[in-house]
Image (spheres, one colour):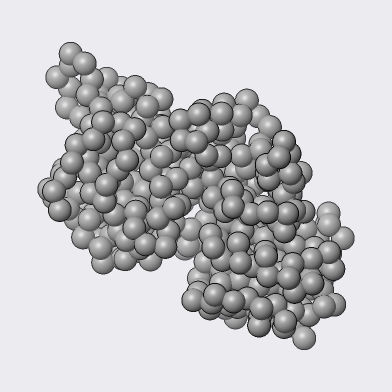
Length: 413
């Protein structure tokens, strides 16, 4: 496919280069590869990522540490093999010094070992499998975002202690993303004193949730759901149609009412309580400024896909400044990025742990209608959460990964 050089702000194609020149300067550009699923079922979320990429580069005038930025965007189409092929192309043909982006864990698993072998710093900006930061073949990978378990560990404990719910049904997509989020909630909810009384795993090709909602144990105080995109839209509508709304609380994982889907929801989403590292209703100067500018430039409320990329790019730029733009020395550059901290990202302060995963705040949010729009109103802040929550990292890493059957559902009826 022919590559097109675009002016910042134009719509990116499936494969394109984005060059913002520094006027009157001969400095070589810093080349950053960015991989996202621009086509396929996750394309809408990928657009949020690319829009945030544009905005982050606009905000630094297209240059960092005196060097222009050249970002080459490639489409993985949600396919691991295509993601790896695009990573190879970015390294061998385009000569990138940094790889970024990547939404899906499966694509991340294909790409990370390759860039590790090539000693290319890799900022994964949306891939959530918890164990990818533990692996030996990802030494050059950094994740300035939450892992799949990082949001739901604190939420499980918080929900038991603050919502008066004692018995919960888990319901989510029948693959690793669903397992990690819901089983993390399961573990801490029960450790706090609650009981998970049922688990319902729905196929990723399910178009009708009615048969699964009919199975929900009516003795539950709450249902905790993990969906995204059109799955969230169908679930919330059919939950109400099934006559369950108002009979039990509805809780959810980070993507369930994220702004990428809340834009298209109606009153059926009201009062749903979720947790995430971001809310567009976060009442801080940095968050308000980001939301205002994003809406002005992109015409939408920023989702957490938007915020993750925007803050990760800001964090990357700080690392570039720390080495005065010398990204060619990948070892020193990698060390500098790992030491980088941001205190005023839209989501709040961000630092990395010893495994190069973000430590940041987790927000508990409740869907409300304010000024005619639905929003995730922040009702609690859980500060400085690590991917290991309160567990010993060595012991946690030695345990089995969360799965369909782990932790076991000892109280299921």
